[in-house]
Length: 133
Image (cartoon, rainbow, N blue to C red; front, side, top):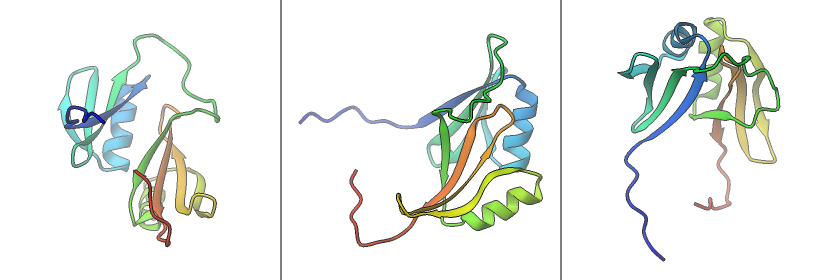
């Protein structure tokens, strides 16, 4: 078994049709801090060495409105209910309020950003099963 080279950071990039609207959403509503401003791309610290990048779309494509989109940006926290209340106070509309998902043994809620990306806030419920890495 070979060991791969070290991964130092992780960035998820979202394409946006209006960088200013997305910037306001992620800074003012989610409270993320700007880590690097590259002009047409802005990268935000999520936690530790995990980042979210917002980049202006190169082509004028319609916003992501497909509810079956395969992209879900998940933020893991023990404070799902607190995030739900915090974001509701800031005018965020939720597609699904905090709910226990017994199949995956998680407690989570869903909302969308201004470009239609699905964002999940979740916590893993504790049980006797061991997690596999």
